[in-house]
Structure formats: structure tokens, C-alpha cells
Length: 365
Image (cartoon, rainbow, N blue to C red; front, side):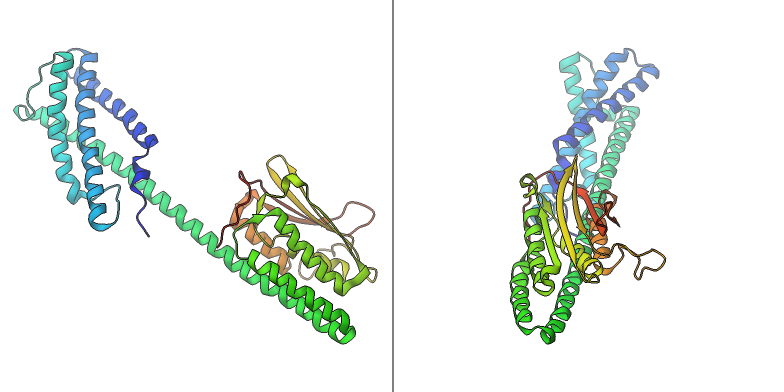
């Protein structure tokens, strides 16, 4: 997997977090020195902060410098160059940071500190504190890196699964349509020719749209209208359609091929078995932060669950829609199939998915 940008690990938020925790760490060291007998609590804390921040500045600055240098040599920017490079950086940073802090303590506080190597306790305390802080921030950087890589892998797997589901759905629709066309050729050749012309136009407008991750809801309604026009050639006056898309929802980004499988399901299982046919209504509305899409038919309705084959709402098309929603939005999206709640009967498919924060911008897969 490619190395993640080094800038992510040197973002302002991360630097601010390190700075705050570094002050708390230095405060604890100053408190420990005061409890150990060094006079002046605030003075110990101030001196500890001067030395601790100097060590951090040199060690983290050295880490950044080594990382940038390795990027020029190898083409990869690493948040942690490895102990082979960092042990010398830590050693020099601890020694240089203590000396810088010692000079600042004299200049700003008037405190005379002994050189690092004149007292073993000073050397040990500074070295242990510097190494502990460095290892801690190294661990947090690696944890952040692994989380980012895991999220990238999860997103890639979801996109791959979505493309697979979509590639399975398109031939399913095409084979169903060709099977219907084959029957119509023997019964009514002129209508079969008209249906073939509609099919060619539908495929021409649909295949390009099916190769994007998202497109405007208006495009989804347009493709659904094309499909209904194709089905109207075969069913004639037995099929009536209503499409209702509020203008304010026309640019909302949605995955392609969400509505067509539901419309196909409504025609195949709801309207076609009835001699009189029926009506299909496709509507969109917004409920707070949720986009609600409904496909209602006035067909024969849902079969009894005990006798349904397959179970209601679990045919190929509806199951593919459920799988795609789960891949894209998890539990935040849903598809339900229920009986219509009025005297006309039929079935109602309801899609719920989160409203995107920005208008649609179709992106090629």
C-alpha cells in the first residue's frame, strides 16, 4: 500500500495536541522534582517546560527533517523513519534540547543548571523523559497510520463489491427485457420492432450512467422513465406511470440503478400477472436528513410470506439494491417492501438513504 502523505502526521491539530500533552508531561516532571526536594514548585515546572519543549522541538524537528530527506531519496514520506535513523536523532535531540533549555533557564529565569554530563541523575531524567515522549508519539502516529490504511482498504473493498453487484444487475435487466422481446416478436412484430428501438435508446443512455459512482437524482428518474417507456411498448394501455421529483431534489447525488430494479420488480410481480395491468408511481421526498424514494404499484400485491417464492422483497433485483445500500451506507440506509395502505392495493417499495452534504458530481469508477 502506498505511503500516506507525511503532511497528515504534521497537521496543525496533531501538533497542537502534542504541544498540550507535552506541557502536561513537563508539569508532571516538575512536580516530581519538587516532591523529590528541589525547591520551588512553579520554578521546577517552568524549567521542566523549557527543557522538555526544547528536547521535543529538536527531536520532532529532526524526525521531520529525516523523513523529508528520505522522501527525496526513496520517494516515500514516512511519519517514523525507523529506529536506525531515529536513535541518533533522539540522542542528539536530548543532549541539544537540555543544553538549549539550560541556557533559556539562565536567560529567562536566572536559574543556573549544571551541564548534563556533570550529574548522572540529570542525564538519566532527561534521557528517559525524552525517549518516553518520543516513543509515545511514535506509537500514536503509527496507530493513526494503520487506522488510515484500514479505512482506505475498507473503502476499496466496498467500491469493488459495489462494482460487482452493479455488474450483476445490468445483465439481469437486459436478459429479462430480451426474453420479453422474444415473446413479443411472435405475437406482434411491429410492436416488437418498436420495443427493440426503445431498448437500443435505453441502453445507449443507460450504459454510460451505470459506470459512475453517483449521478443526480434527475438522471436516475430519467433512466427510470426510459425503462418505463420501454415496458409501455410491450404492455400498451395496461401500464400507466407517474413520476414525481421535486425540483429541489433533482441535483441530489444517488447511486445509479436504484429505482429501475424496483420498477422492474413491480411490473414483473405486480402488474403483469393482472389482465388489466395497473399503475406505477415513482416519487421522491425529503424527511429531515433522509432522502425517501418510493415505488408503488397497483398490482396484485405481496403474496403470503408462507407461500412466497422467493420471499417477498427478496428477488434478485431487490436483494441487489439492499446489498448496494448496505455497502454504501450500512445501517443508515434501508429498503422495505410492504402492502399499499389504500383501497387500490398493490405493493410499496420504500428506499431511505442519507441526504448527501453536497450536490451530485458524477465520478467515473
